[in-house]
Image (cartoon, rainbow, N blue to C red; front, top):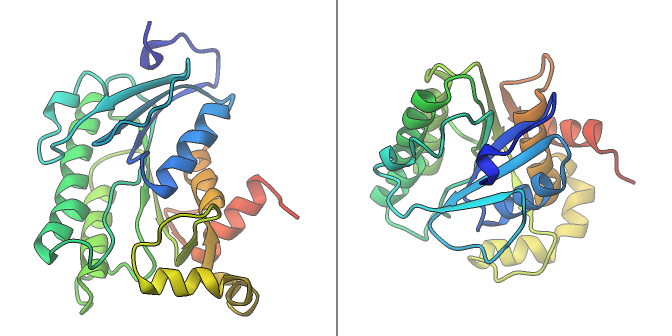
Length: 237
């Protein structure tokens, strides 16, 4: 019996995580596997995770331009945390749009066909511009993806727009700006608390929104809102 078809008790959910090999997706996976509300986790991505856990089903899918092969996997799912993306500057502008918009839209199309009542948590970014007028490609593309998800027909869509995401654990930073922000994080957090969010807090908020809902809050969560949501769900010292 695979994790996606495990029997569940009342209130338990089956969760899909897309992009679990990334920073936020990785924390989301860890939290979901420990969460008693989640009876099964299906991780879909382009890289193997090297994790074996009874609640986990891992699906390798390298071509997100066509998610039709995922239709059966996505059947009977209750919630999705979608963290697939790319850093600005790491890929061409055309590829950034493909990953940010096209892959998101294609995945949502197949998910809605297979599990139309699923809740959807989407990792967007601070400054995302649904009007399409921003000069920043990242902002336009995230805004375009947000618009598509909100119009896709899911009963609940949660859009998360974090500012600087603090990695928590040491990692190889993708560029100089991230190395600088990590170095000054202690002071930055004190001076501009609503411009930073811990990666683990962000991921917990995304998972909990998808599997438990957010009441009357949302669907857009700016960095300040994410911090408040994370604190309300898991108060920290």
